[in-house]
Image 1 (spheres, rainbow, N blue to C red):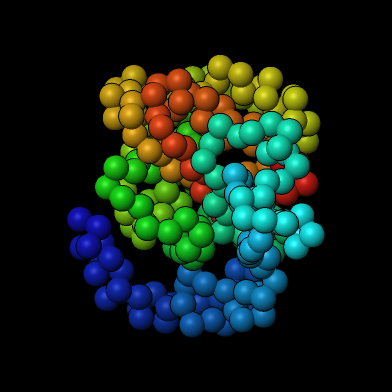
Image 2 (image 1 turned 60 degrees about the vertical axis):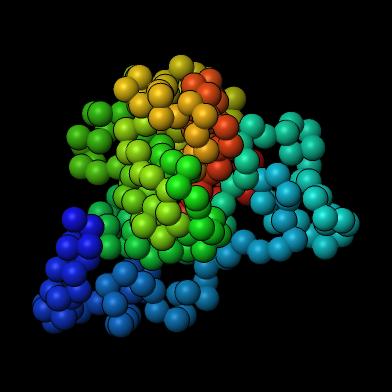
Length: 249
């Protein structure tokens, strides 16, 4: 079915481009395809690199990375329960504008480009890996019409392998927006809000999991997801995202 959709999209692409000429979602300049950026805007994105923390992939300075396996200060102070954060970009003005256009501007055609950058950081996955999106509460999903993390998870699965399990996690109760809340307030708001879907518990137990979200800010949401997955018996849990906010982690 995915192959058929891809082939239909490929055939119809020229007609779509004729009616809706591709434009860069950041600056509006003409571009070659619907799902990309112009060269100038590509250069504005901040991509993670090396050296990086061995536990969470936080970029380190050459001075801090004195040897292989170096850890950042937050991971030294509190070792994470996850098996690494794999971010397509570091959060800055350009990545923020893209995620706003994608999530709130409904520019869903950006998902393939965002997924490509995430997949480049994550690399190939074996068949024993499950791809799980951070869940939305059903009322927010109804209001927005789509789960932005689920669309990115699908792109990641198509490029990296593994098995997509869209409903592995559930938001059991509605939470207020986390924007503007501090780290402690975010964790308090999310306490008990996310759980593993009972119908998927057998698949989670003993599995390796890639948890996908659009932005990782304080880590409160992903921590709640990792806790639920680990409690159900997941082994390694990697976090994959479009953008990572460094100053709050």
